[in-house]
Image (cartoon, rainbow, N blue to C red; front, side, top):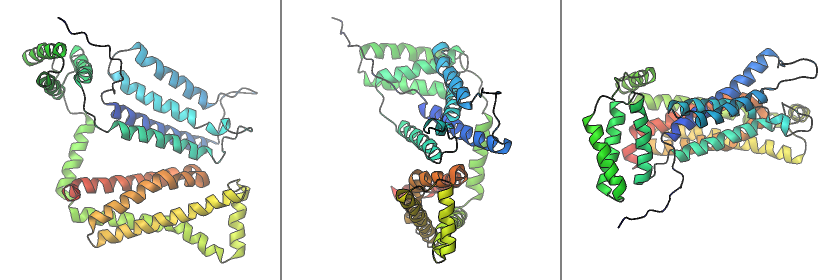
Length: 365
């Protein structure tokens, strides 16, 4: 008697979803940065004449529409990478004009626009981090991925690595034997994959892979733990002093009523402080930025005394907090100049994470 299986329409995460989201993130960030830079350098030109103005939010909407249509029309796997790129560009052009749609005066330079854009970016980063979490896949999900990989065989673009991954998954499905129908299908596919090698393509390492391999080899050969620690110390010290410079400058000016009045007048004139609440947020910005500078300075000192584990934990937490919380305030007050500030912090964070992964993995475990 045949066993009837209930229909299963539950969602299955796209294979390599984290890579597609990374493409979207990078294209999103670059689009907003390049757009703001281009408009600033060219004096904010307008496309159109008279009463007609074609804002770049329309181009963003058009690109998003194309990104929505592509996976509905084409089944090729490479379309997903192109779709991720277009989605990031489209969202970047769209969200860049958010200031016009949250104000009655269509104010493109509204101070709250930059934090909103950054918040949307952080939410996308959170989604990206969640997709990187590995989950145990059932046979049904495994076959989704197998069939996607077999599309490469149809295009004569299946590599040996992809073939080996298919064989590993098929063997796992056969071993589990949780569904007889899928087990039988796995046996037949495994026989095909093992016996017919005509579908394999001659793969050459991509330019990215070649250069990444060279960089890793150079790092292992020339950058020792001591040198890496020294570079981190210099980076953390320099950045902590830079981060502390603004709060210290404000604190020094408090002693001079004239200087303090000038600072407050600039904030009020630029509509960055409109009431007592706005002034409280400015005070919070000074306190948080100063705290980050102090903790990074302590992390650098811990590195100096070879307290690597404590230094990595403190630097990691400080930089993450700064990127997610403090930078929101900085985007409000310093607008898109904060992009440079956040980028430097991200580079420092990645350097700290890489140091932990390379030298402290066993110690932390």
